[in-house]
Image 1 (cartoon, rainbow, N blue to C red):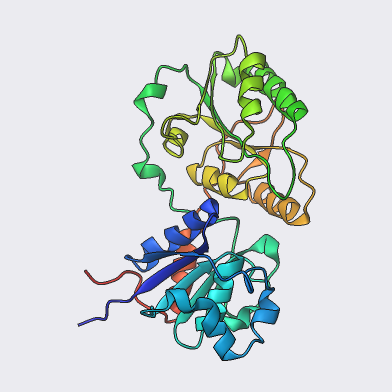
Image 2 (cartoon, rainbow, N blue to C red):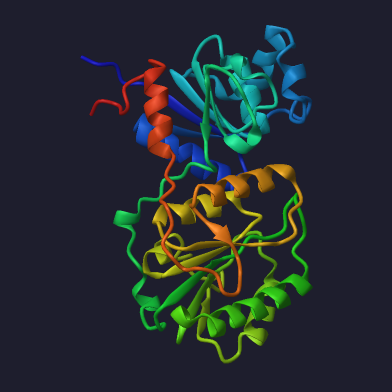
Length: 321
């Protein structure tokens, strides 16, 4: 009889987007898993992983003692604090870290990181963007949105982050660009906009869009009902994504539809590298008023990651039932 493996998904508690990536991998690779939101003691919470790795074993154990009642067979970790948990427990469990851990990858059994993080190592699995669990074949376009005219253009808004602040002037420019985009492209005659903000989108932006999109058929999620994302991706004919969200850009590119990346002023090099690769491999294109709206190549990295992890002889792809 095959062993049933115990898997923990360890993520810094408030990292919603990171949870999605880690759980997508755990669900499809291992099957069942336990979520472990990580709140380490204040004395080590912000400690660089390079320093934490050099601490005596008893201090590492002290840092994670609140979650180590029954140790798992494998930890999938993502986020600053979660990486410290993986470092503390790496001698007693298998460890897979998502994204750049800030310490050489050989400290873990595997590191899954996007190519724009520029990590090297025998145990590094590089991905084009973020992994996710979106499967286009099972998405169902919300019936409440079917009344909006076709073609439909999905607009995925990002928001304020450590990489930049969403200013009101940018909202005005984007609303005007969306209006011009709809009116200037012959393939979009009579089109409507299906707009969904993220949890980071300033509320003022929604007001600005409502004032500046007058005369254009549109719908904006009011953040008071259940978010129809990602199901809305099913019924749109093209997708515009704000460049500050690598996760949403990666998710949009799984649809094989025209994906246009709208500039929001991000200057960080890893974003530039990501989008340069995305454009070069025909998964997306820069936003332009008269952009070519041909379908683009599907981007779906999760299956590739699991295939490479299985070659490392971790565990079976799924828990036995």
